[in-house]
Image (cartoon, rainbow, N blue to C red; front, side):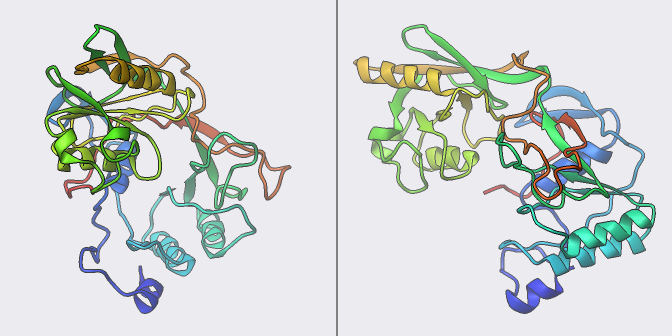
Length: 326
């Protein structure tokens, strides 16, 4: 459903022309909604029991309304109209933009609702500020869903050479003891691609700061520089920790632990660490809204309460794309 996109932008050589998923997001949302029942689950080769989709007997049909560089609302509206014509019962929509009056896709959803199709849309990921909600979730004719935490927490622990442990989010394997280096002094604390000095990083666990690029891209940069692990620390203590499929064994910690690890590296003659992974813990603030989930009040129509509902939206164990990410 990319007529407008193809006309104005064309197609890149690395872009699928079908709705095949090449970054994991579509597979994750689809398998959460309608994945098979009692599937043996594993992440990066680590078993995690069995999982089931919410409606495991349902069928899934996917429509490609965006290209690698984004897209046009005309293509999104065409995909929505086609889904209604194909007889779907529910549309799960995890695409959004700034809050505004109804556009082509919002109007398409109005017609979908009139045809008896239930529409569930993401509230967005614009954070915890007031009136952060975006379109199409501002519209009254769909169910707008926020993201909340759950008690289960996939975690790992980085244990410093002085014996002090710090726990954070992790779904990767662990490491043995290895030298520990602060990326700030090995090419930049953000661990940007092609910026890390392999002479200083190779064979070491690297401390990186969150920001600027995707979290998993930082561990890829560490891998490409020869690093064997990564500790990523946040820019706040808001407990905004993510369990990503990193390229090297990794733990994501809050700012305060990250700065403590940074101080240890600066003070130790030969700083070392190990990552003890494959752990389960409890999310201390659950249940609560995630820090990234967009809040109301509704910036388009304040008298229409949005989001409508919330559901677990972080550390959800579901499918991902077999196409390599990154």
